[in-house]
Image 1 (cartoon, one colour):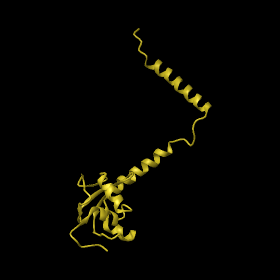
Image 2 (cartoon, helix red, strand yellow):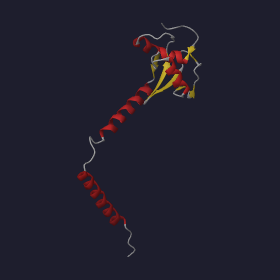
Image 3 (tube, helix red, strand yellow):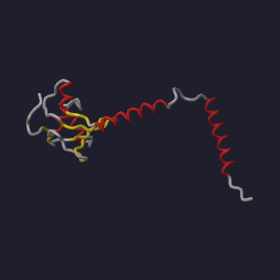
Image 4 (cartoon, helix red, strand yellow):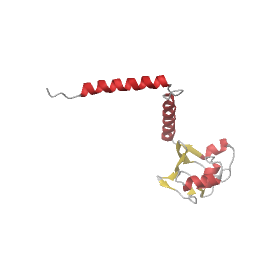
Length: 141
């Protein structure tokens, strides 16, 4: 399946490497600035070559990959994964962001506070505000 041609269009390669389900979705992502080469936005007609480093953003995930092979034919996932290699820095960054998102969701309560809970929270805040004001008030005596 991999081609030995000088290069193929980036939208075709992204589709064949299974980053996007259709070429039109790949084209929309490229035109929307979700695909970069050396920090610069690419155009749909840009030719991909072996050894190029691409940065692809899909939702929360931002992957930096190195092109290992070229293909204009969409094959099974194991074959598509042979077309690129994700950089170690990219993998570490994605794992860190994923753990941060998981931890962020843990701090959220399961349900809304009841009326009594809200009263208790407001009372607690007011008591702390008064203590804070007394502690930081400036006396010129």
